[in-house]
Image (cartoon, rainbow, N blue to C red):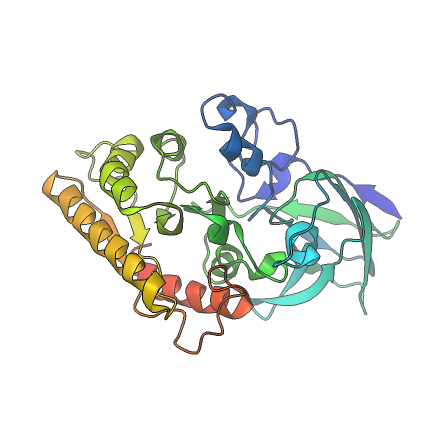
Length: 329
């Protein structure tokens, strides 16, 4: 077998591909390390939403990867935290192919194909860990070419849910589901417990040539933070007088059908709606709000713990977002 080692420039969904990085697939380049809080920076080293697309005619694909943290959580699978997902593009749609299940910080996964025809594949990296080394092996007489989606990305900024907690495997995070169902790659800037509507993140977002920004931070903020931060975040992201800037879409927090929790959620959603109205009054254009509209369903089957989504929740949430942003993008 011969092996290829992808570089950041070979990856989809990654900011500043040509900037210096300590770890190849960390979501932010090193130039931002001293611009944001340490907690956010450490989480940015996780590879949530990062993917690599390739074409190969090999009968075998051998994936070797090592991760930085190699840790576990009691409410999320190891595959979701530090595994790899592989999808194949068949008949104009992405279909699940295989999951590289991690056993330790160093792992290997072999996929066998039935033919030597060209196959277009998408490899999703871990949601809650950082790839240290990644090698993609193919048969010695075969070819491999990395491919890129050059369309403008949909950029998500949010919480642990945005980061992918608690999908069973990387491909089931809603940002990855959405990327498979549009022509646009999705950049995932979800930071577990740290989606605080920060202007420092807004400054980073302002430098991205995006198709659309999706802000989903309500689970990590209280009512006071919403009132103080939403307009400041919008100001940091763009100049209100520029009619050509891309849309900014805020998302209400879904209700969980728990009376105590939902009372607080409804209050936060109401305040967010008011802040969006204030943005319009201040002259900001193309600021949108997606209502939650019971998007997770009423059967209580969408989470692992009453907060973080399982695969059912992520699919429903992705469908809800897609339904509401198709006309915007």
